[in-house]
Image 1 (cartoon, helix red, strand yellow):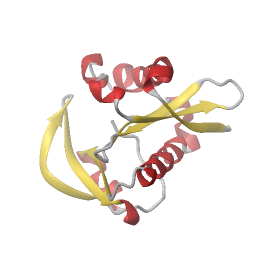
Image 2 (cartoon, one colour; image 1 turned 90 degrees about the vertical axis):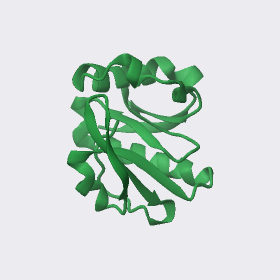
Image 3 (cartoon, one colour; image 1 turned 135 degrees about the vertical axis):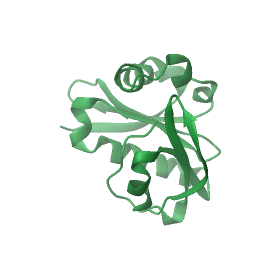
Length: 153
């Protein structure tokens, strides 16, 4: 499958971004809508992956000016195609354009070891978000290792 990942603005692309995130986080992961969609969406830099042939949205992610990467979602049928990896690489590019020094993600506990392989380190205490135990993981942008990535909320 071929697809294109583009930087988009919330105001123009919200229906497409919401569609993907609802399918993944609300229906699949059972995260309440009021938690999934927050005010940060209006200020974030978003990326949207679309299938080249159908132009249907298949994935999304966002990065905030604070360096927080979140809301990375890829439709179930497209996960084998490494769309999440390309979304993250696009978010890393945006982080560099924003001249960020450090990026971070709130990782579900079961995949902390996975992110450690890519130079993300745990920091702070474990906390609960949407009924899921998570921990903050940080990485200096210059030390990010491009590789396979896991979906993250």
